[in-house]
Amino acid sequence: QSQQYALRFFIDCPDGATRNDVELPAERIYFLSSCWDVEDERVVSRAVKRQKEMEESIQEITQQLDIIEKEQQGNNLFQKALKFRESVDLVEKRGKLKLQLQELEQAYPLQSGSVIRGPNNIMFAKEGVIAVKRLRGAMGTREQYHWIGTFTYNEFFEDD
Image 1 (tube, rainbow, N blue to C red):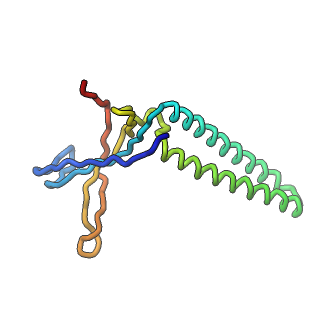
Image 2 (tube, rainbow, N blue to C red):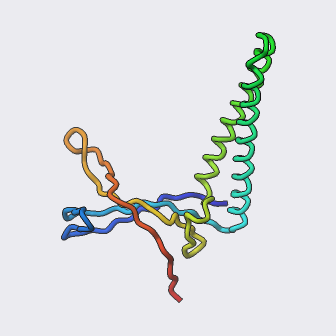
């Protein structure tokens, strides 16, 4: 099993921060990313295989729909009605597959180049977002995060 988690941490900058042409006042800077608890890498391998199968099925359905559309150009009304039902079934099937694919992508780190292995069977998204928090809304009661950049993990070190 694998589960995606949000990884959030912050750094207090009492003197503010400056990088290139961006200058921030004294405030808290937030780092937002994702990580996955992966007990067994074989689970991720199976998920990647399932992802490819789903993507291939979606492609095949799209090709079938294109063929049906081309065939419809010369058909009479009765033939079009028969093919319409087939098209509806294919569109529904493709929609379900896309939802399942989204769920799979949320649960597993499927892009091997975009993750890095950390300690204790944790995989981290290599890139995350840097943000600052601002209060908006009536009387400044609603928090909003404003993205100001990105950060990247290069590697993790474990203490011996």
